[in-house]
Length: 373
Image 1: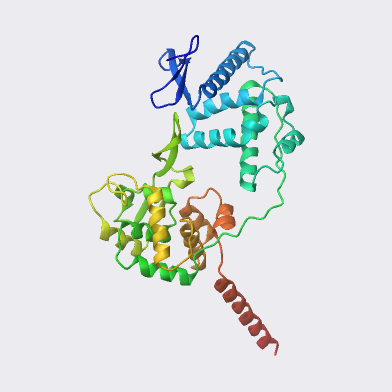
Image 2: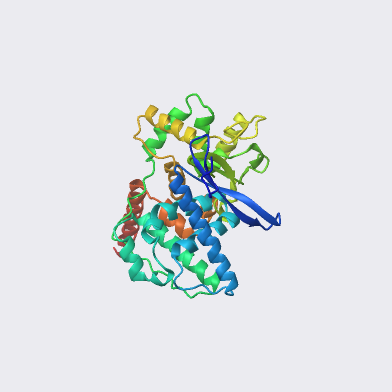
């Protein structure tokens, strides 16, 4: 039952629901929307924030888009997140919302826009985060400040992120001997999971791209695989602890790409071709966790140490470089927006390759010595 004077009630599933009214531009009328939480107090606070955000927008509208300096960063963040939700992919909205809620909101909930200087931000977040989260926090904060600047004609600084004194752990790839052991296990009794692992080694596809691959994406005549979509588990609206497997377009325009298929990859696809919609999942996309589970089983069977599925993509990239592919071509095959991403993250020359280059150099010096003699 709803509490007196409030549109808050406890649902049968145990969660609390708070309802509020907004004006829907498409329907041209006021409609009800809901927020959810585990307790009455959490829902009440969510409704208060929404009310504050709507009042702020009304104030801004009446003031001719001028934003007062005493505006809190958190109020702007709620409006910004609403816009992200409407205009960007669901995965982007959820990523930004979780980053803001988990890493930023508590540290800056009482901060005003006028507080947001380099020194203030550095003092608040110093020592709290890893390098990757630190970078994401600055990215979100700068997007918020830019949003305030553009949307409300309010001049805000661009925050400069100080470099942390950390070194990223070197990314590992499967050694040639490890690849051989894995291949032996894969080719002994091929199934759709082993085929998926092999296709990653043959094409460098991301996990989500593999799981969302359809037979209609394969051009058997021209030997081309087209990446049109990916799958990812996302939090469902109103279910903070539950996720839903969601099919969507790839992470960026560069990720939508065509990959030429080798003879071995084409032969494998022809062998397993069927009348189902998805190559590995049948009538629906393959669950990524399921593929990761089978990959780890293969590693155990091959007597290899536990590794993340993404190591296959790194291994593919390194094999391509050692095979003589140019970085630009590899970058396009991987779906990167910049060749520097390919070089910095996905090219890992093996010790054998480095030794070969050193031996070649000695041979070159030998030729020079012969000419001098």
